[in-house]
Length: 355
Image (cartoon, rainbow, N blue to C red; front, side, top):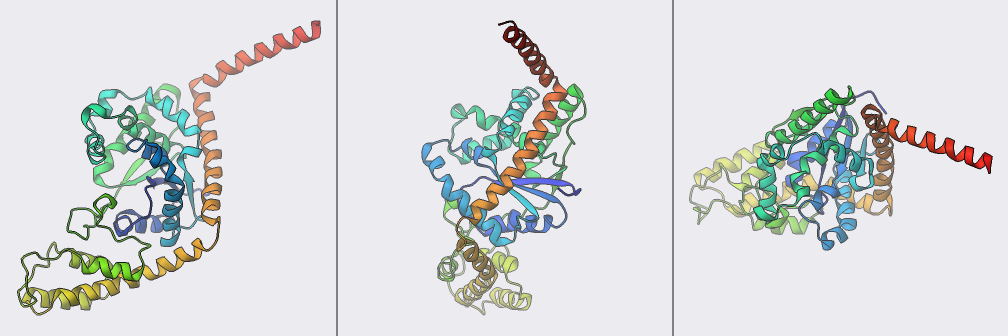
């Protein structure tokens, strides 16, 4: 493994990824793998905190495959990065247990993001599971398992990284220096508005353009996009600021002259929504074409996605086991078992010799 600083980030496997994921995180990850030793987590255990039902677990096989297929299609390279399945790294379970002793319940319940996650999952305050409250502790285990130095997050998730930092500092204070205290790599994580004008693109709101959508599906979704509701005819001056169609043009249309021309004419009432949307669909399909081609190529290699996850998980298991061994050694837990087993084996050998 290289001497570059390690980074860990990941996603809950809920299926195919969309343009919002690309803008918010995937494009940045592709860049980061050139500078850092990257670990990309398929966070199936985290999914259980809000979706523990059997039907969600049964869907994991397909959802994990689809998500990692999208990782590969956008340019995440398994030769330069490690993609692994969280639930298969059993050492993280032990780390989570040890870390639970180093943080208080009031500290966790003060995190507003936990309430937000519960609300988004339709969980009322009286039904919040312990696992969701402990979400940041498991997250700390994920981050510290490969000794991550940096964690790329948006400003709204900085508090979760701070929990990890507190746990690392407390562990080191109790047992000696084992973990680096990771820094939050705060970025301006953009949020892509949904096709319906809602604040965020989301599968649950059915307002997504998926990275794997074919050209016809993209055309149809763009034709149905929300624009300026006050503009009932093409000759009425329209609003560009906050208009989803122009937000998408700015994000995905590399022809800035065309975009500027459309904006100018839209503000004057000299262009219709049909032309603006047609040109957006063309730009989106041009952007998605190479992603779809790479996706199809990987899809036509049966077992390749699973091999990427398998090999990445084996590498991660090795690192995780080393980390837990060092943790137990620092804590003195290894010594307890070693003394017990040494005395027990000695007694058993004497009994065998005497018999």
